[in-house]
Length: 122
Image (cartoon, rainbow, N blue to C red; front, side, top):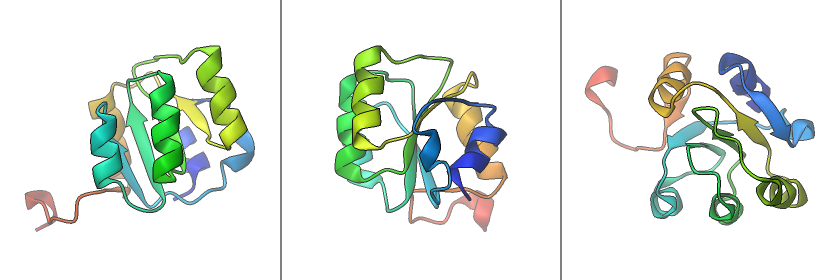
């Protein structure tokens, strides 16, 4: 799936990094604990979060995330937007809550970062 597909599916506003919407997204992670993101994300991962602080961008950079979706209509400040733009990290904003955002993406085939098989997949 491409990041532009995520943008359309979640009816998300592109806050910055529109030129990167052709990036491949293979898995998604919904988290507000950046330590979990650092510990559990995989390659070509997308982060969905309600946090809008600068640490989210730093974590995305360290984890080599393909992008970030801010959920619940939470809009980051200008310093977050500036750093993301400088680092080439696309930011999207969706009005859906995190649970629904993750569920919508899972339903259309985007897997999570877990390596375990869930009861839904059996």
